[in-house]
Length: 626
Image 1 (tube, helix red, strand yellow):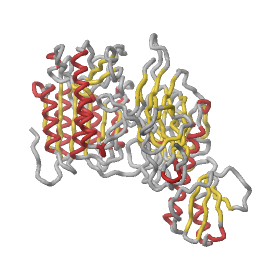
Image 2 (cartoon, rainbow, N blue to C red):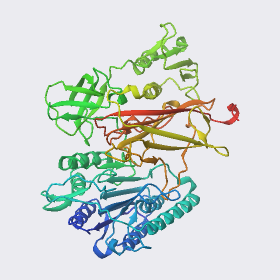
Image 3 (spheres, helix red, strand yellow):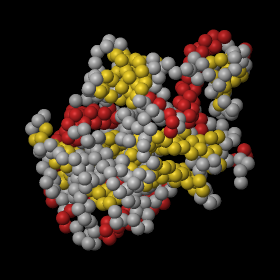
Image 4 (cartoon, rainbow, N blue to C red):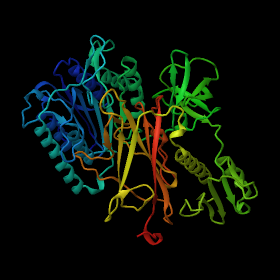
């Protein structure tokens, strides 16, 4: 049993191995990961065989919650089968499918006692754990949702996923119990609710929702292991001062070299240093795709990322610190939605590289400077360096993105309609010049994304899709978000749909929802599935659904630091793609917020998008809406 430590921060790990129904590497994995965690100072509790029953796993998790205190580090690891119950559950507010892990007593399931542990049960336990400490990491080496139709596997490989018929009534009871727990948690901790995914826990998972997590003989360790676990341990033992994003990139690349159908993913606050709440800011990057047939290098999603001919990128291995200098590639062509990258030294690019922007040939956004005569002369050159598109009132008129007004107390930034973006003037300082450059970049980035449409992509997605956004007004009637006027406190319920035929070989698509907010803020809302919400043909999924099924909707708020002087436009954009990928590098904090740039994992593919736009009014004395 895990015991409570003294007041000093402790490190505790719950390691679970459920080696049933044909698996042979789970105990090996548990011992391997346990050894790696002990190297990081963790007290490890290992559950296997008769200890890894449903009751044993839930009891040990409860002990971990009870023992944990603020600042402690907690890790939960599971190796075993994953299962999926699909169909026959469409009563009340149940989803089309439920996922679960498989304890060692799964065969003791009866018509009224389901021995699997639903993923939503695990989510509730994780929620309760993060109420005790926010330094939480979950590692899952199992299939999240095994499909009945699978590609043949090479000899020796085994899938960590299992399907059979499960008692619907018993599963529904587990689901109802989860819903009751969530209602109590929301009532007891109203300030600790979250949208779509727990923001305080890092989750590193072996594969996507419909992919196979594989175990096989790993020569490096001399025994059978999950490909995911072997990659995680290698990353932990061969790196220092890493973030979870960097570990996730290393794990993904290592696993994909062994099994191209298994794509690990990393979710949550992945910019944290390992087993810590300390974060590290980093610039955006785009993965480099190498075509082995032609030995050419490509950056995919050119329209999404605004990549143009002449852009320059610094290349380094994915998951590595960004070097101060290194190999530089130049975009020499954009075709089929992808940018062709050519190295200055003309040498080939190895697999597993990512490209960090150095310079862009996109025209600098135009910012109109007003009252330039009030600006101290020595600051004009500094502002021109920070804002290459700065123009005075004497310059020819153009399509201005923003306006910079100079006063005796400092400078104010306004949008193109003349609305203030700062609550008060910023002083004439170097920090102000740097901040102006960042704020204008964010405004330009958001404006570019707003201009995208289905025709923006050279390779459009040939699958019918839909995006529904319903406004849930505080004290009012529900209705469509399109062209509505909404206020802080209102919520938006969102659904993404694959309208392809559910009968036959239809295509799976992956949906992302971006919030292009006021003040240039850009957020990715599908945080629980950062590589995209998987939609089988005919499937509908809701964003933000809590464990237990409740869908409260996305809460709207007015950004801190942005003047509440009237309504401004906000746009929700659903991007649909034909394969899993992350769009996290599109995130921007916008004006007046703390910045946290994140690194992507973008793949080649086809895209389309659907947009809805509404007015967000701050309320208060400026509100003229009933």
